[in-house]
Length: 117
Image (cartoon, rainbow, N blue to C red; front, side, top):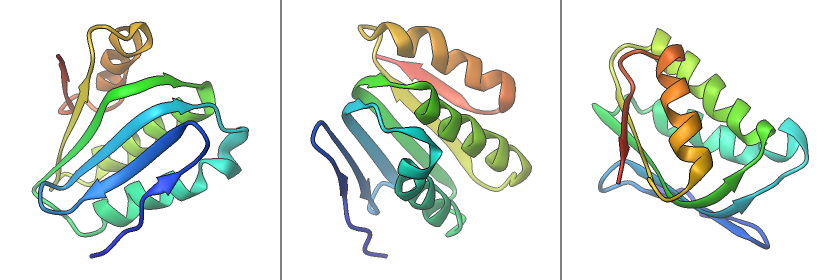
């Protein structure tokens, strides 16, 4: 599967099929759910391949607004229902929003693995 990177002025979201990893970088301040649709579609498309493990690497994502976090929450809820793929989110201990918010996603999806590096 060849999925093109999603880029904007201050961000990059790219898929690495060899590791089933989606890397998020920069600042995601998109205006509403409609602007997050390409990222939502990317998450859904990768999950639809039913990989055994799927990693979301957020270590270089400096900021994510509430609409972006809603996309991650929606994805976690959808993946909770699909029990075949193990989801791992990797964040940074040095980015405050990640320390506070990523653990909250585990409430939505208890088998979600969150690793802060």
